[in-house]
Length: 330
Image 1: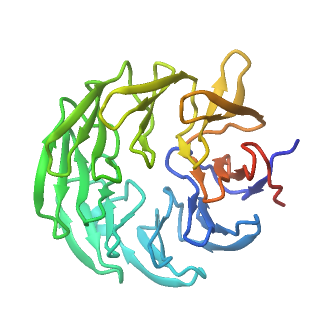
Image 2: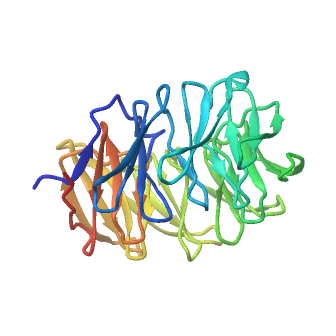
């Protein structure tokens, strides 16, 4: 069976820096070469926008539907949902942008460059600049607190850039901050600990892993934390820091969580075959499907349970109804 896809025929997609992003209305956004694509949920092209140079990172979508992304032409772009240009802002004085922008519920835009951390207003005006560069993309809490990683520090910033508190991990922090619904912040550090930090900066608990983890932790509505470890297991950690279960799998993608299953791509190294796995929430296998492409990098999942994956300039849509139904796109 041919897998449903949209091919862009563009320049290479970096699976760990560019992933599909789903807008409030179900539109799927992704970039290839110097184009940003908007795809309707039925797989038809909604529009495409050409930037002045390569688009290195995924876009970010604000609550009002504004799409923000950066390009190597040294501009941050703000597009309306119909693809018309709202504004663009030159970041030439601050070095190249390192990650996708982050948007607060109030509309502030946060940007990490090689040498600075910046905040802009929703109309493209510079609010402030910090003379330090976070080592990953920031996390933004519902109360507006901005969390950044600098070496082995997790820093909590107020919206005016002042420091609320900082937490010192035992080693370099390698993951972006992940914020659970109860406000707990999860980070993984090079001393092999998953750190759970309270919103006041105190340590809640630590969980020792057997090896490095490759993707940021994922959290479920019930507070369960999922991590993918290089020892060949996916771990489910309870909100109190104890192990719920682990499942042996040679994963190749981030975890995407729907109301019915936990999805991730994996490889059988004996046959060099790629699979999409669906795990139940008790850690048992729900199903797996052999793919003709590599399900890798960061996946996205919509409210209908459709999973989107990018591989070599092609957007694949997998799902609908049963774990492995397909939509055919032309």
